[in-house]
Image (cartoon, rainbow, N blue to C red; front, side, top):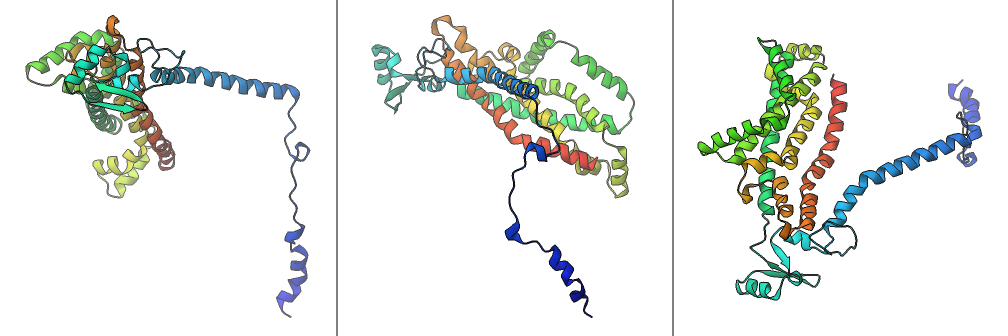
Length: 348
């Protein structure tokens, strides 16, 4: 007898008719969890209200900065109200002034010099070479310093951390102790020494901008080496032994095995090093006397230094534009940081 016929009746019994399937909404009585009590609902609402309130506190400075940047009601003061939308603060950064805010004599003098003009939404803007703004140069200098600082510090930190974590050599423990002690020294106490270093570089015809790159890189290397070294210490040495059995040398072990694992830590080192020139104002103000050579942090301060020609609106707009590189980098590299952490967990 055919086995199919023997079990056919059983198959017919367990066959499910799709037409008999009905969708049913689950209620609290049909779930394992008990329905929330009134006190639990009140506590849940309180938590949500607390989160909303905290979010407003965090977003308030950002929203205020955004509104003040486009508020042209009074460019001398960074205010939120009364609000008048315009692009005067933005174009002031690039030496263009609103014709309506200049005197007739000043406009006539600029037109006689054949200053370029353009019209945007019914507002005429004219180029004023006397404007105290070198925003384009400041932005270029800051990106130059930040990029090379991030590159030099990331490469040096990766190699130093690998050497301290995987090799034992004379003076390794003592040098790590020195690195920790260096981090305890306040940054402001070293300004005089750093100024002397920059002056020595100037005497041998080295640009102060290049000296800033070296100073920022040295400061980033000292602290981040200890952090990445601690990160490497958490990776089992059995991974090294397996790679060496497969024929990897020390460089192959670093580039093929360990470097992908420590990638999230190196990305954070690069980001922190990149942001140093955007946030430091003391050292650039001290060693960069020329206005065109300043960074964004020290250059934007000029808009607030002259009480007779305050440009607080331009200052807020410049601050907003200065935050764009950090925002873009964090949004773009976030997936690599999370992906690197998960990859490291699997490989470790």
